[in-house]
Image 1 (spheres, helix red, strand yellow):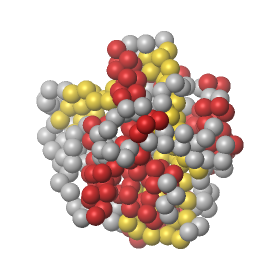
Image 2 (tube, rainbow, N blue to C red; image 1 turned 90 degrees about the horizontal axis):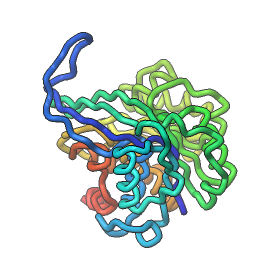
Image 3 (cartoon, helix red, strand yellow; image 1 turned 135 degrees about the vertical axis):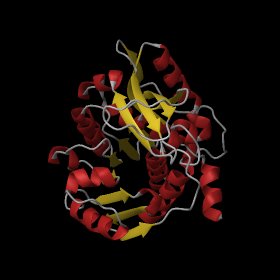
Image 4 (tube, rainbow, N blue to C red; image 1 turned 30 degrees about the horizontal axis):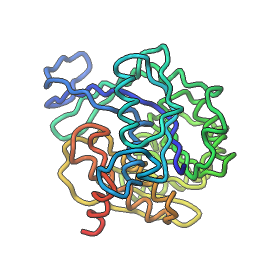
Length: 313
């Protein structure tokens, strides 16, 4: 096994609207669609697809890639059954993704005509994943551990601690935005945030690559490596290896849902394969851009061959 993802598993209910409503306003939207989602599950799928040597060659992880394990919780309901089986079809090890007596997490997503989204998450079973549910055995063999903040913060900290114990590189995608205690950050090797999340942590909005580098340098006082994603402006990073700015390819944006998760999955797999941070960020930017060209979360995540074809072009 090479990558362990600990995080949320949701069913996304998506509706398209001409524009996002104002407070107190009601708008009519399209027929709603259901998509498999949750930041944890999305990033696990993104990693599995980037590790797969043959595009859309799904199957057991042992035959397709070095292995991705998903640790999470779903409900004992139809959504939970569908989501767990979907992860298995992607070749992801779900032995530590257990159905429990709670509703499966649901995300309510509105997408406007420009492809920008607003999201409300009902955590459900995700918030029943507790620190005591995690065991060291589930992390053995991991080279990279990927975490987000859609599960309890104390569970995130315990997962980071276990990742550090097995010698893995621990990545925290600090989303959704919230304050991060030092007792968590001490176990994090790479912090990845977008503009909104960086604002919440630093008090400064990084709305340009130049400002983002300054913010990343500030955040790097607590975490060795900081990456700030900037949407169509790409991403910047600061680390002991240096710093830099990576642009993204121009694409026709259809739906931004899942773009950040595609970035994380590509970043994690590139680091797992021994690439430099600059190379990993470049692959993340390409994967994130490609994800915006399709609708949905997991349905939009690109395959390894998609990303490499874009890199070659």
